[in-house]
Length: 432
Ligand code: GDP
Ligand code: IMO
Ligand code: MG
Image (tube, rainbow, N blue to C red; front, side, top):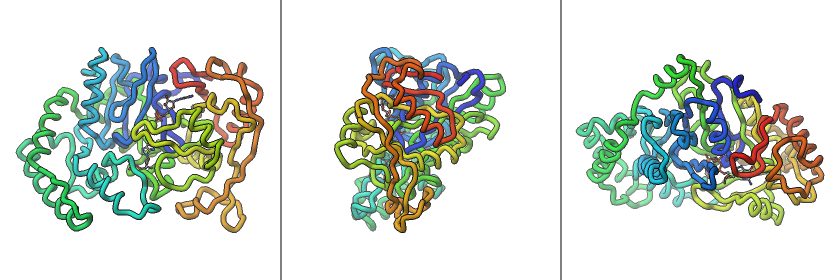
C-alpha cells in the first residue's frame, strides 16, 4: 500500500462497528491534511493509543491528536455538543491544542436532550426481542427529526437566538405531547433551559463553525489530501445493514459524499477495517456468534467491551459471507485486518464460508433480519498458532498458520490486506 497513491481515502468499518477504525485513522492521519467525520454521533467510540495514553473519541475526529492537521465534523454528523465540548476541554487539559485545527459544519444536526430521552423511552417500550439495543445517545431520534425537517435544530440555528428560542419552545411543546401520549412521561422538558444551555455551547464553539463542504473543496483544490473517518460500520448502515438492527445513518463508504458534502471525485480509495473475528454490541442477528467458552475467551483476550457503553461485545468467528457483502458494497480497495494477536492460543480458527437457510440451501446475505436469524453458518477450521504476535512487524515473521489464515481471507474476500494490526498501539502494526 503506497500512501502517496491512496488519494482521498475513506476508512470504514466492514462489520457491526468497533473494528479498530480509530487506530487506523490515527495511523493514516500522518499522511493526510484533513480528517473528516461524516456520519453518526456520540454512539461512536474510537480508541487511539499512543505515547502510553489511551484516548477515546465519541464526537471529535480521531485526527485531532495531530494539531497540524485539520479535523472536520461534517454536515452528516448528529452532533452531541456536550460530548464534543467535554472532549475538547479534556484534550486542552492534557496540553493538546484544539483551535483552528477543528472545524464544525454549520449544517450539522444537533442532538438535543429530548432525543436522548426519546431513545431511552422508545427502547424501554419495546418487547425485549424487538429492542435494537441502542447506545441511548439520541441518534435515531435526532436523524428522525432531521428527516422530519420542522422539528430539527442545526448548528447554524444557534447563532439566531430569537428564532432558536421560539423554535425550541414549539418543538418541546410537541415532544411533550408525544411523550405523554406514548410513554406516558413528559420528561420534565424545559425549553428555556435547553435554549440557554445551547446558546452557551454556541458561544464556546463559535470560532470553529463554518461551511465545511467549502473548506474541503478548497483544501482539495490546493492539493491537500482528505481522510474520511466512518463511524459505526457497514452492517449497521441504515440502508444496507441488518435492518432494523442498525444505526440511523449511512455508516458505509456510501455515506461519505452527502455526509461530508463532497463530490464523488473527492473519494478515491476505501480502506475497509475488519477484525480477524466478528463482534457485535446490541441486539440483532449474528450467524457466526460463539455463545460458548471460545467466544468468552476471544472477549477476554481482545478486551471486547463497548467503548461507549461498556457493554460486553458478542464475539464470533470471522464471517466471510458478511465481510464479502460489505467489501462489495463499499468497493473496498484494501483491508485493514485488526486483532490478529487476539486469536493467538486457539487450537483452530474458524471462518464462516457460507450460510445455509432454513431449507438447507446456500443463502446470500439476506434482506430481512428474520432470514439472517434462520441462517446456519458453515464453518471451515484452520490450524491456530501459539506465538505472541504483538512484537511482529512484518508479514513474513508471522507464524505459518497465521499467514495461511490471512491468505485464505484475501482469497475469500478478493481484496488485498494493506495493514495488519497486532495490538492497540500505533507501532503494533504491519504495513504492507
Ligand atoms: P472503533 O470504534 O472501530 O474505532 O474501535 P474501538 O475503539 O471501539 O474498539 C477497538 C478496540 O480494540 C480498542 O480498544 C483498540 O484499542 C483495540 N485494538 C485496535 N486494534 C487492535 C489490535 O490489533 N489488537 C488488539 N489486541 N487490540 C486492538
Ligand atoms: P463505532 O464507531 C458498535 C450499534 C448499537 C446498536 C445499534 C443502534 O465505535 O464503531 P444507535 O445508538 O446508533 O441507535 O444504536 O448500533 N452501534 C454501534 N456498535 N460500534 C459503534 O460505533 C456503534 N454505533 C452504533 O450498539 O446495536
Ligand atoms: Mg467503537
